[in-house]
Image (cartoon, rainbow, N blue to C red):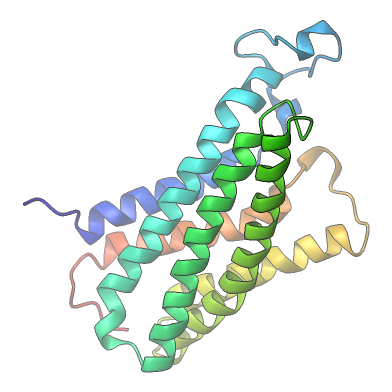
Amino acid sequence: MWTPSNRHAGGVTLLGGLLALAASVPTRWFGRVPDDSYVFDPPRFSALWIERTVVPVVAVVAAVLLLAGLLALFRRDRERMARWQRWFAIVSVVGAAVGTLATLLLVSVGPQGTADPTAALNALLGAGLALLALLLLLPGLVAWGSGYLRAERPRLGAALAGGPVVAFLVLSVNVAGGVEFGPVGSLPVVLPFALAVVVVGYDLWERAGNDATV
């Protein structure tokens, strides 16, 4: 029976990081966003059509590929992890799974917003699960990454521990500090996290064998 190798997992994880970055590109970069009747029936391949049709799919695929990458990394290195690092890795994987479910729920809300009761419930559940995913992923990835730093794997350790922290700090500046990112949208928040995912994918690709030391 064929099973995906670490190199395959590295490739899809790299793709996941790039898709996460693509999903955060501001809609206005694709053209003018209509503000008239076209809002309800936007032309195909217009900025609004891309936002409603393409971006949700890209976001969900990116979340699934991220989950797959973390699972592959855990599978490859779990036997050589310290017990505490292994538990934090499990917390991170669970957080990624919760985040994937949150993404699916938030995407399902669609352009109708919360006017529909089912959409409103999905939005509420999605927001709650997104917060839970953040609470799991942030400490989980920081601890998981610190284990690689202690084992002299600075690139992977810095990506896992640093990427989410930088993204969270940028988000905090945006929300709590009231700093607007203007035309770049959410890119400053997503960029460090997406780069961390790319590094994880590259590490899986480069150290494809199961004998990769932690």
